[in-house]
Image (cartoon, rainbow, N blue to C red; front, side, top):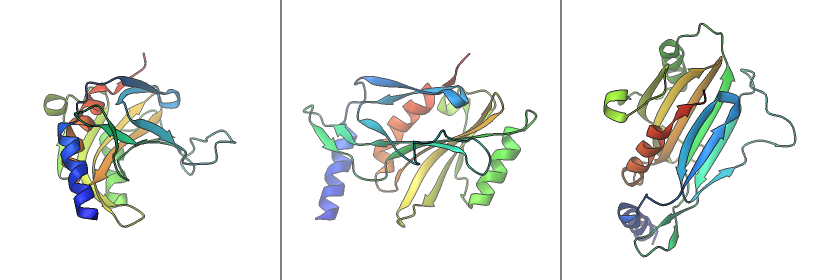
Length: 187
């Protein structure tokens, strides 16, 4: 039954039209904006009763989860678990090199680099940024595939992580690339 459901979700995702309304997301602490297609909602990560700290030991972490996709008939269908966009922000020294900081962080997390995201191939427009295609396991033990973008803006190190389970990732890749292409810093 689970395989049938996953197969149906994959099939529906392949035919989903991603030209529906976009939501402009603004992460003011990082001066970052990006577009999310319809069907995404912000989900709480921490106790929102206290202001978030961006200290290295307590970074600002924001998460959006895809709650549904729109099938070819225009119906909203559940997208399944673990399709997320996470944004993590913490302060860094003004002279921090994004490539060195990014490589160090990826190595510390143990995430392999399968390929690099570039402005030529992936329309990654953020200045002082670098991106990767990688894989890792969730806390629940689900193997996830992800695009990870690291950037530095106005003294903040920003990580944008767009992930989905390995079997669903191919159907989300076009949508993730669209989100990556929409990434920009506020002037």
